[in-house]
Length: 378
Image (cartoon, rainbow, N blue to C red; front, side, top):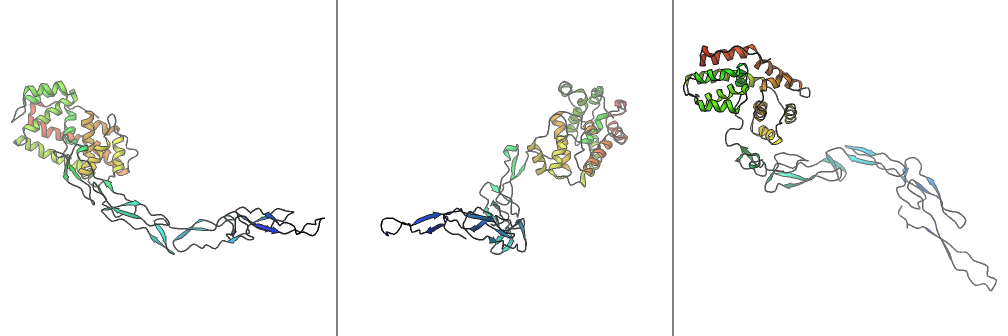
């Protein structure tokens, strides 16, 4: 098959010389080769060029040469191999191991998986195995995988958090906020109660707050710095901070917990992925939740708290009305179960049951003289 690139035909011609019988000089001919897909049917002579012909069926020639016949397609794919390229006039049949495997001697075997603490530095190919390396300092791999590479430890400081547990080669650094990150300062139930409160109720509520009184200076600060629809709510937050241990405060918090347990139960059976959370956050108007905020929430908060915390972060970022938002949020790209849950949540927080809870809690705590007329925000 591999003959000398230039096939030289030596033809010795004896020329007639008028002067004596001296021998003639030899003459050399260089024949043309045949291209891939063809073979030499007839060698060249002094009168004609090389004659080439196409390779017959099931035969091939993959290079320029002077062979007088083509090679037979002799490759047969083995078990766990598939035909990557069928035999043709210029190539032999080409076989390859199935995905995730490579050819070791005569057999296809699975690529090696790197164990935790080791990352892939070179993924396996159909002809070679996976190459693993121990994760260097500052990186980790917590998976047994043939594709996962070592990842950098989470930078807690960059996320505005502190290190709860340093990472090593097998696990990421665990971060935590200075306080409790997953705690929600404005719960949906609290927001639901105050959707019925008109702004002119603020002074009446402040004057009748039992136990520790909120100062007039604090009231003025709320009036100056907050929008009218937010003033009553922030007044309530001040009251909560002063009355957590009072009897009226305990009563309010207990009944709120009943509401919040019901809200949590709506999300309790969901298995929401990071991508679904990302889509949900993109559906929110105005200022968006950042990638870092989303990643921190997923890392530190368990389900169902993740959705509730992200909604809370959005509210604080925009000073918005979450309940009104839930009426118009675009959830068409979300899974059916999550879409239904969002709808049920919005209906519950805007229901007559929430208004009755508002009457039961706030009117018992603040007294009947502060009772406002119901305001319908539906």
